[in-house]
Image 1 (tube, rainbow, N blue to C red):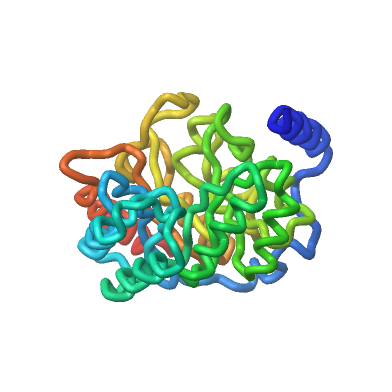
Image 2: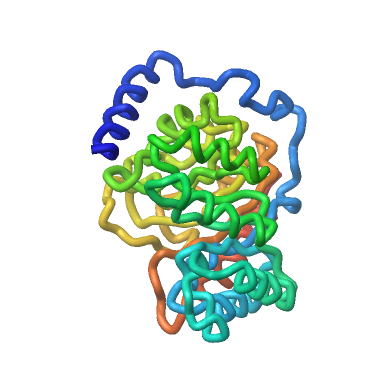
Length: 293
C-alpha cells in the first residue's frame, strides 16, 4: 500500500513539475558553474566493484588494481570474501568492516563511494550509513524510496555523507527520468545525482540532455553504454561501442565544471571476467579526454 501511495505521489509531482522544471531554486545550484572549469585530468576515474560481482571483495579490489585504477565504489550486497566467511558487506560487524578498510588500504586504493541497498525502513538505511561512515566514503549511491526521502536526507545530513541518486530504467525505478530526480532534490539539500549513462537510453532519454537538466547537482557518473534506444531488455555493451555519445558527454561535463567521480560499470558479465573490458574502457576514456578542447 505504501509503495502504491509513493508512486501516486511521485506521479502527481511529475504532472505538476512540467510547469517549471528548468531549474532548481538558486540555493541548490552552484552559481559559479560558468566560471569554474575543472580540467578533465582532475576527474576521478574509477570502477564500480559491482562490475566484478561474481568475485568476492578481495578479488574485486585486485581486478580494479590490475586495471590501473585508484578509485573504487563498493556495494553493500557484495560478498566480503573467504576471510569473512563470504558474508555480505551489509551484515558485517564493525570489526569486519574495518578488515575491508584495511584490504582497500593495502591495495593502495581509495573507496570514495558505496552503493547502498537501503530498505523499506529508516533503520535499514541507518545501518548502511553506519557502514559508509566506517569506510570514510564521501558519498553513497542509492535509490531512496519516495516515502523515505525526508528520513534519508536527514540521515545524510547527520552523517555528513551526500546521497548521489542513481537511475535505472523506466518501469524499474522512479528515477528513470531526470525530472523525478529534480523533484527529489528539491528541499532535500543532501541529495545529488549519479547519472547512469547507459540506463537513460533504455527509457528513450539522451544522456547528454539528462546531464544538462541535472547541471549543478551531479557529483558522480556511472560510465556505461547500451546498444540501442528504447529497449529495456538489453544488457550493456563495452563503452564506446553503443549509442551513448561520449565525446558530447565529456564536453558537457567539462562545460558544467564537473568535479566528481566517474566510475566505469558493467552489468553484463563477460568471460572469463570484465577485467579486459574495464582495461579497454580506461584506454577509451583517456583517448576521449585527450581530445577535449
